[in-house]
Length: 331
Ligand code: UT7
Image 1 (cartoon, rainbow, N blue to C red):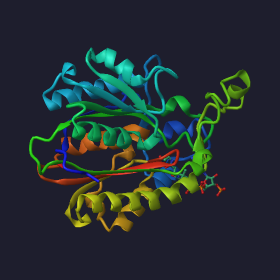
Image 2: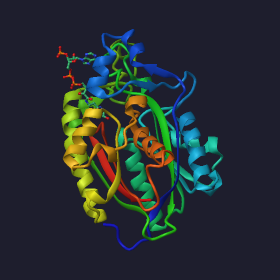
Image 3: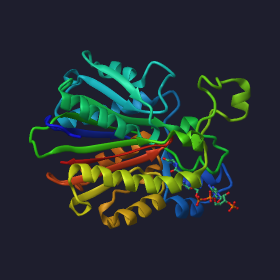
Image 4: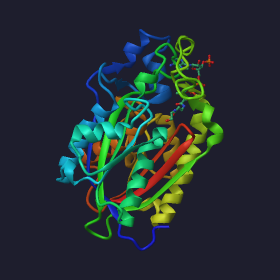
């Protein structure tokens, strides 16, 4: 429940997409696939890939600088940095700490959240809670992932889906009681761990010459299973978040769903009874950027003028774990 604490709000947004573009035509040269198959089955036309020698925090840094500028704030104003990522620069410490140092933020605590494609929504919900309890005033919330680093570029069932990117928002106390984050809802179901995962490289099966030879450090997925459960779960959690915010779906101006597959998004829109004109879609250009997907789409929607003051926006995401979530925000 929300309680009587003042609301938190999103005070600024920013995003960063690497400049290197991989088109479907380029993938045709790598695996047995076609632009036609990828387009009709997923809606994706191209994706971005982070250049060699750069990491997740490099993308996060550029997105963060833009979000801070948009909020009219500086890194020294931040109390916390929370980053959703499953592709940190190092196994440890967190990429949030790497980012903290890049930004020169000096009085913060920083940590990563591992909730895969739902990482940004988890990070946002944590920041919202910390601001509302008064523990902090301002948090930088980031979703940044470079899944290109975990792809088997010979596996046509996964390598066509994902791309790299970062999105960031600044969260702080709402200046106007009516505006801000109205609700957040999160959920996981650990019985599906192996439906979408990276089998090796962790403590259970550390990286070895054998694990690399077998490509076990890359993404393994049962796509059909993910598809089915994603639609149902994002529908359910969106309804819960709307109920908690006491908002009807008709009052929502824009839905910003996780950008995994256009067919998942259209099925979700049908279930929610929302016309596609009220749904943000940019996966044709970026593919599935994991934790970055929702904050990148949010930033683009704002830049395109699709979110005006007073508009109510519904965010939702679903990914490995399974982990999923939704948030309702009045801008
Ligand atoms: O954030 C969550 C991350 N994951 C997801 O969101 C994934 C959700 N799932 C999906 O998006 C879809 O299930 C996929 C796009 C992964 C696959 O689409 P599908 O319609 O479920 O296809 P399928 O797996 O049933 O495969 C149909 C056929 C198969 O051939 P056969 O067995 O019918 O002969 C596949 O081998 O398509 C084949 N196929 C491909 N063909 C050309 C699979 N991948 C490709 C490909 N190019 N890239």
